[in-house]
Image (cartoon, rainbow, N blue to C red; front, top):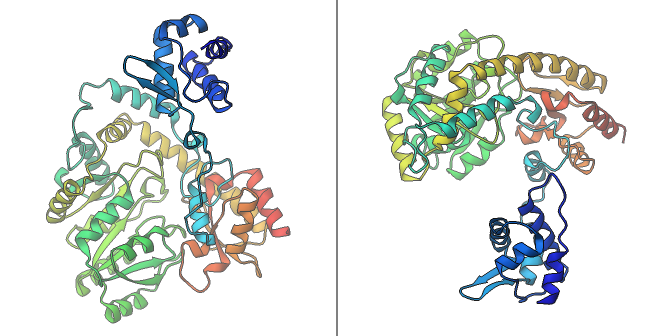
Length: 469
């Protein structure tokens, strides 16, 4: 016991750091290094308090945290004991069982915040987010008497948010009752749930090429057969589109109606009219993914504005507000809306009312609109700078200039996108090769750049070094 007392009495506190955390950190080190051996009994709480000159409540909090870390165990009527095992101390995460091909490694790296530069990622930098407004909304939500912390959320979603979304949708020409607006945890959850309702194994689904890489993976899980239609910054060949409809009879077409990822194309009124006419003639449903609607400069028509019989609309806030709080929503026909609510309840997909309350606050107080206006301006300015240095690097633009989150570019002749991406990982530069988004034969010559993350001197310098090497 004397050894334990000496080690504990040696705890030294520094100003500016919570006492509990300092006790936990220093005793964790003492346990890992053997200063407090396995099985050793710790002094009683009152004595620990005296040894470290802190309050008993501080000691109790520290012991709770050490117990949660598996470094201390308590025995009823006996006290606290050091628990030092090989499992506790083992920092080896074991073999990496994830796929190691370039595309799989890149996908994981795009989501990993390890200090690397990520010009290939799909979200805004933290510095671009409305941190102060978000914190204000969080604090207001936690103080609100309407927040039901002890209850499940409403299956259709937080009603005031859905009411705010109804107003927002009306600005796009989409007029629907609140009951046809259903919230989801994110757009991919919305897509996954809708796939269960709209397709069955063996059905054919039509996708744009290129498109968001998760689409192919999700459809494979549902047993769908996938065909693609080439799409560029001018749109698609609608005659070729119709021939695919005749040949393959897809039940569903999934598309970005505005600011297509990654080309930035938005459907024109004529293209919207033609797509809707084809959907009625050939009997396929359209899933309109409008995730980038709030960063569009020039307003274009939405497919869902003409009705929801053949169209389901989805959007959300992960690209504009925060990627972590992934509030999204679907707008559907009355029949599909009822089925989606039932499916959410059946599979435990009821969404977080806390996150929805925060989003609702920002929509209602105007802070979200101010943020997106600032973001649109910043993206326009960054797009010009990034386009300039990509041209200097010998890349040619294959997306609409000046608008949206992404630049889709063709690499200089002789360069292979996956090879470049693999070398980029070795230099803490996470790129998005074209093969991540496209199944086309030319995809290996393309790269997608996130405008906001690429408007950075270090990104430019590291990319140029990759080209030089």
